Length: 152
Image 1 (spheres, rainbow, N blue to C red):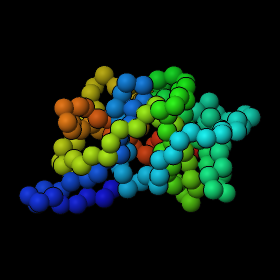
Image 2: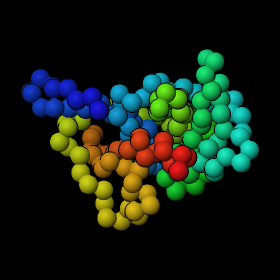
Image 3: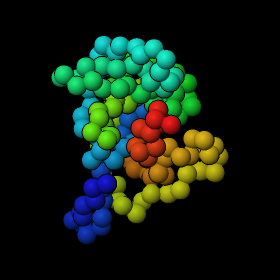
Image 4: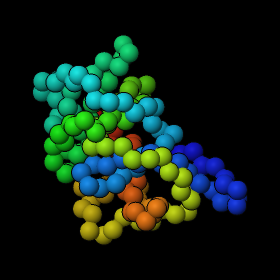
């Protein structure tokens, strides 16, 4: 995670925010290679349910993951607002499908809080915690766990 210092000397980090359903989530902005529109996705037979398929990104094959399925929200339905966050994991590009993109925000490094106790353990492993910014609560994802879900 990239941390910087703001003018007052406090450590800050950049988060790329997005929505899965109505939930505002974020990833460490330094782990996001790019954000693209949803293109042609080729289904993969016998793939786990969270793998929506693969797509060609400038000659590289990208495995597409449905973040809503991984988080237990249900099957995602791509729309005009949907986007794909491209992440790199073990020298492989992986696309994470989200419902819509938010902003890149700067938060204080110490602003993170623990997850609420009502988050089931099966879902809690996908989150680093929550933080508050602009009057909203943002669930910060653990990209390592999200990307490893389809490799179990």
